[in-house]
Structures are given as C-alpha cells and as structure tokens.
Length: 136
Image 1 (cartoon, one colour):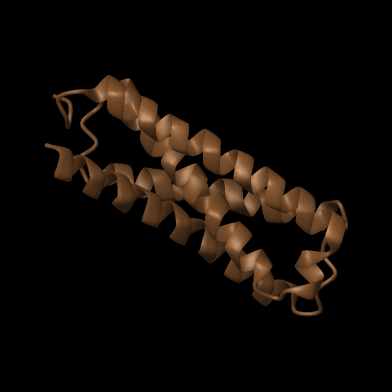
Image 2 (cartoon, rainbow, N blue to C red; image 1 turned 60 degrees about the horizontal axis):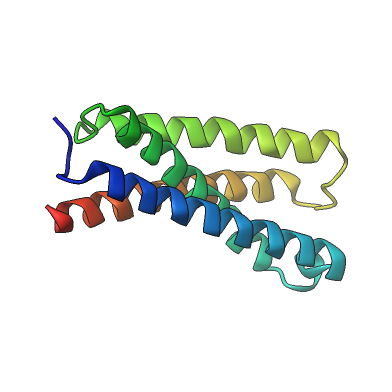
C-alpha cells in the first residue's frame, strides 16, 4: 500500500527538489573552494554538511517511496540514517586521505560533520513524512 494517492507526482516533486538542492550544493561548494569560504566563514562547513545530509536523506527516502515499499514503518528512518551515516563517514575518510583537512581539531570537526550529515538526513525524512501526511 502506498502512502499517497498520486505517488508518481510526489516522487517527481521530491526528485526535483533533490536535483535543485544538489545543483545548489555544487555551486556553493565551487564558490567556497574558489573564494576560500570554508576558511573565512567558520559556519560555512556546517551549512554544507547539513545540506549534504538533507539531500542524501531526500534521495534515499525518494528511493524507498519509488520502490513502493511501505515506508511508514519506523525501520526505514533508521535505514536512511545508517546509509547517510556510512556515506558521511566515507566522505570524511576521503577528505583525510586526499589531505583536504587542515584542522587542528580534526577529530571533533569530523564528529560534528558526521552528526550534521545524519541530522540533515533525519530532517529530510521528517520533512517528506510531514509533507506526505498533509497531502493525504
């Protein structure tokens, strides 16, 4: 049983949001790299990790809906959070291996980045869930 009557329309809208936000993330990251915003604005990294987690949360929740499983079960929230957690950890390893990290407090920065990614995914899941329940 699907959550709403017009699943096709809803999944298309969610995918559109994913694409728009991904483009925004790409543009912001490109500008931040060029103009050193990550170093000039201490909070910019926070925004980017939260937005990245939100996008991944939207994407994997979209996938759950698209496949047609009953995502009302709480287990899907945990699955989305774990997938985003794994991707966020992978990203932090990627940054470390490629010497993209210049922080003195690398461990605390990495921990916060991981938490922000999972928080963003959780917010996306709750956003979609509320949106769908409101449309029923």
